[in-house]
Length: 295
Ligand SMILES: O=C(O)CCC(=O)C(=O)O
Ligand SMILES: [Fe+2]
Image (cartoon, rainbow, N blue to C red; front, side):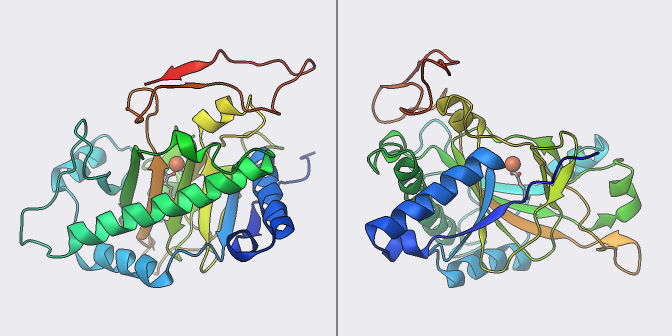
């Protein structure tokens, strides 16, 4: 028999942003325990302006931002069928942003960069809370993220036949874990995101949209950093439950992940050692990983 299915918890962030020290601590504890249980949580009252979120989804719906050749390539391989527009910080010399030609979508570049930096602020707030969850100084994680090698992704999953999704002939995004420390995902109201149940390997839990929430999940880097006390959980996008339209098609889906990207080969602005977070190891639970030098 299956063990009790885990659930992705909802954490109200307002008391962390505006509350007393004990309010802050209880939010911090809730974030850390969600990261330990499922690796995922919904954050509500996160302070990210609603108007900006709506604005970014509107850009995506109103304009075709995506490279047609990439889609054709994906279709030919019968792999993940999605379109992707990505950007990072504008001063990243190793991976410069590629924008549409000047004048094609006035205001789009500014909107993306503004969104990028707002996500970075939210990510810092979440990392501050996480540090507090570990009873560490609030800047413990933030100081490793001062030059954000992050990526803002504007994803569009086109409408496709439900039967092709169900037979896995084509996928939206197949099971994977994220690479970095934390990922933030804004999703529209279509659904389909699923997370592997930590209590029942191979079984996936739906993570249906909750209005006004942002999904936060831990990545492989944070799992390693926390001596495997935090989970980087496998997740995927499948057909949303009961979502087929009259013509047998699954509605298109838009989502906006903001991912911490590739600490191993990007350049934080200082050289530093990343070793197991204090409190995650002991004589009974020795460190499982060697420290890594990040430069
Ligand atoms: O579209 C989504 O909600 C999931 C995207 C995702 O998991 C990713 O980009 O790593
Ligand atoms: Fe992901």
